[in-house]
Image 1 (spheres, rainbow, N blue to C red):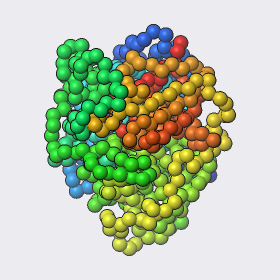
Image 2 (cartoon, rainbow, N blue to C red):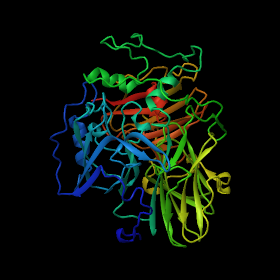
Image 3 (cartoon, helix red, strand yellow):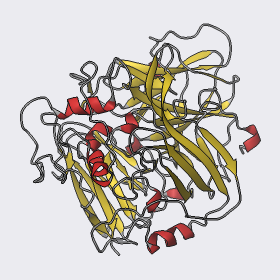
Image 4 (tube, rainbow, N blue to C red):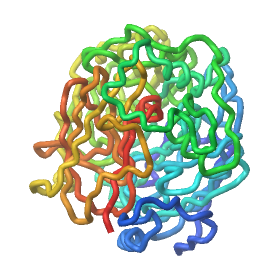
Length: 544
């Protein structure tokens, strides 16, 4: 049995970096004062994000000891390993310093916004109270520049999670960090632990910004094929008459709710539109954005982070894909991995050489460290570049940046091949309700949507508490999409794993089931940040 005194987090990149985050413990309690304005009003007949049903669900989680954290979102300079860029981050660290709590704790995190734009925090993968989910215009008001907001909720479920903004394309800057919820009855036995965050990077390189990338992509590849898109009747204009045609969906919503003016994205830097990236694993087109760098824990392949262990150590690796537009195929040279969890939930253990992570997905694995120096390689799937870190348990020369572990081409487990552990397997049952979501859009006009409708926070797909709900993702596009459900985990078919993010390949249909047990208004969206901010988002709403 692993005990806290035996745990060692390897490497210094995540363990000690991040001057913008301070943590301390205090007593118990659920003081909700200081949470700012009420969530935006929506259509009548639906549970409000701060309604009594939400409070009752939170009380059932039995919030415990309070873990207080302070977090500052701020413009800063980041060293990617030989390349320094200006970006936005939590403190001065990339990734932001991890937040680590024990299941049952109450997390009370105060976000101070020192950015020039409104922002927010979304807690990816957590089943938490709805008014803390961090979606401006839906579950909360945006956190304005110069303001602060306290996120306070019970962290009920152990697992590997992360947090990031849900405001425009801010996630594709340096605004992300791991959230690890430890199991007080941890069943796994291991000696050391790594948290490995994968990312694709463009911000601050040769003048590029994510907003400029979105503006370029939004022009499309020519033609007017909007795949039956309902473009609405506003002609790209908000109610105040401002031109919003190049703004993202959530940025438009924020602009309507605040008098603060966010800077308009200006074309800057070289073209970042990717052409010809293909992957059989992803069903064809691999992605939209040609990133100049791919990172493991904020470092490029030329200056990687080194993790140290002893030969024979049993190591738990928690993989998180925080990328904006890139799937990563990961392998540890000279080692096989035993998959233990995906998206925070345990699975029946399965051995593999490599894993494929779409944006937003997480996998936990166990490895037994061999003697030597080994590359942990994250191949940007279909994009012909890699990120890497190093495992070192002894002497010898480090593998070259170009080293490609043979395990990358070995056995690769997909999520659909895994089985949920008995303790978290969804009980058999027929769905009470099926919500069909056709993924629509194309690169021609770069108009992504669900059921042909771009995101509108007033749109609702209704469910009722206590129902077994089936989401049927029908991919009618020529691209793959990692689809993410807020506030719940769903189950893949035939006893498959519990997940909150799953890859839907082009031309395929993926049916997933979940129990409607967390009332509120919850986003469903593609976790390609540029697809989402172009419109591929919608809302699941609990009826009163």
